Image (cartoon, rainbow, N blue to C red; front, top):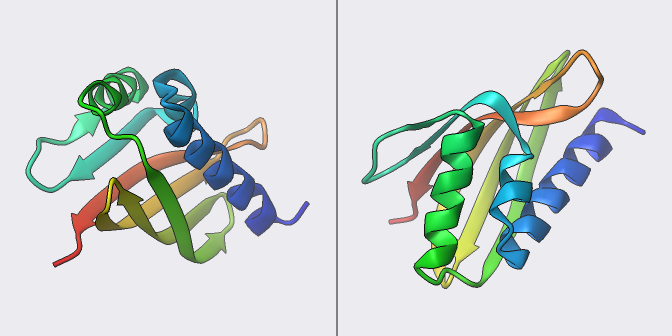
Length: 117
């Protein structure tokens, strides 16, 4: 499977977990020491904290999710992806950095989310 296909599988798994409201599966798409940055909130550090963030999102009732991958660039064991995320009608631009572990699996290392103005 090509690197881009493996990354797209990761992104589809993440989107499915979002749609299912499954914070544990969402967190499983991130590296143990991942960082999540969104406007209007402090950075979230680590897989457990990212899981807790998703718990909060699902608790407040965010129900509809869609991801649109705009680009994927692979550079060795690191990849970058620009995406558009829509949750309950609110759109954000997202930059993801993914890393390939020694086991060959891709995980999200960093996510930066910027609301569309």
